[in-house]
Length: 361
Image (cartoon, rainbow, N blue to C red; front, side, top):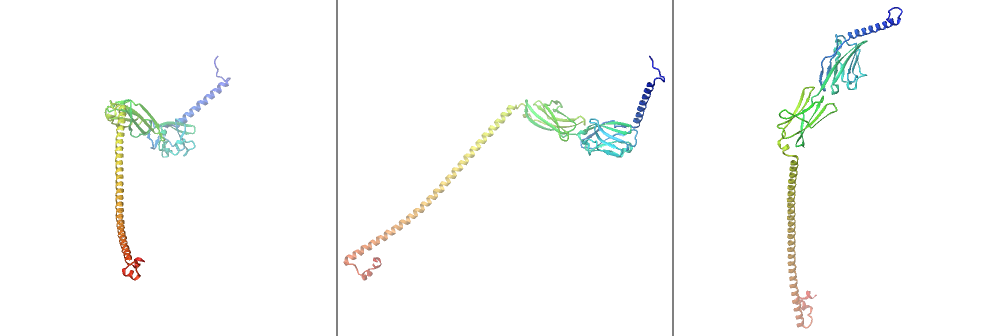
């Protein structure tokens, strides 16, 4: 059964009208869209952490954009980085990470330039940005890719001790973005396998990378640690020359034995020194005691001499007393003899005549 296109089928007439309306609307939208076209740079924008960067975007054909609505958003988060409308910057919807760090370059707006300047770049600024422009029903957008990089410090090499018959060498370098590669190589340029490798990010979102390798005596010449950024095509390299005695021909147990023997020798030497020092101190102590005893003996001899001197003086005084006593006894005997001859006690005049009055009284 076929369909007839006559006046008796009003439903088909309504369908045709709706279809026509849709086609006209789409045509108007396409015309409006064609009137507003946005273009990006067509290449990746590269910048260094800490620098300022301008993300380019412009209308094509170029026209005055001061009365348009321009919004820059992150492709990953679909959140507003910067919002401009009718000559004003609007910050109500701006991502917190970009507060105080973005501005639409006003000098080029009249010529259709929609460039966004971001100051003090951070590693987190790395990624896709979308420049969107709206004018009534007209809308268009362009994508801009930003690569943020940072070159870190020269690698620091250090020895980590003996392990598996060789020497463990450590390498670390900080301040990189994005995460770099860490490679080891010998003097001939041959790569050496790492025994471990790890990385971390600091508060500024920069990477620190660490690695270690076991080096044996078969590795000749200097050992090199290279940290390389594939994005920047830059690298940092440091070298270390390890002397032969550090290798496995001096095995860890031999090193330990040498350390024990060295400690033993030091202990013995220290013991001998302390013993000799103690002997010297003892000898010095006895010498001091002998000197004290000699001094005491001299003092005693001096006191004995003084006592002997006093004894001699006392003996002399005793002899003088005995001599006086003998004289008195002799005088007494003479008096007794005189009394006997007189037969009576002598008179006072007689006593005075003999000189005995004072003595008798």
